[in-house]
Length: 112
Image 1 (spheres, rainbow, N blue to C red):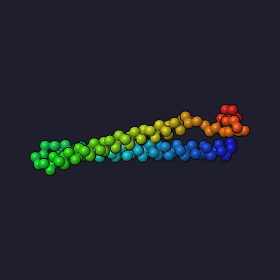
Image 2: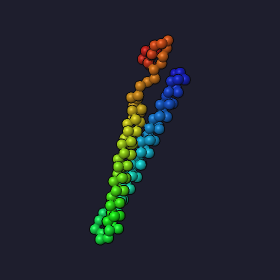
Image 3: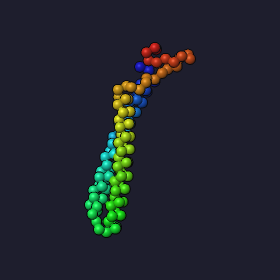
Image 4: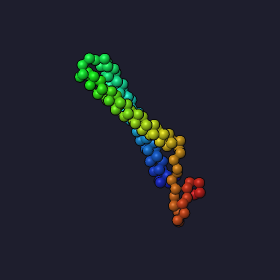
């Protein structure tokens, strides 16, 4: 195995590790944002039947915050899923192998 092939294998392993770390990080972020959305929605429900205008204003603000964190949770979940697919593709070998140019011709691993 040539140095180039070894370097490519090491690069691929490192990229796989990074993709896994990104997937995990975004999944944690989605979980955190979802928890905040639930907390804000619970606070809004607690203020729902309040008599004062201040409490109703606060309820509306809590609902806006719940929606904001809900959207952030959804976006983080999409990114986590994307990075998980990238990591799976790298682990399963779906990425193309390197192509080598020799004398003006492109050669892949099968034709060398």
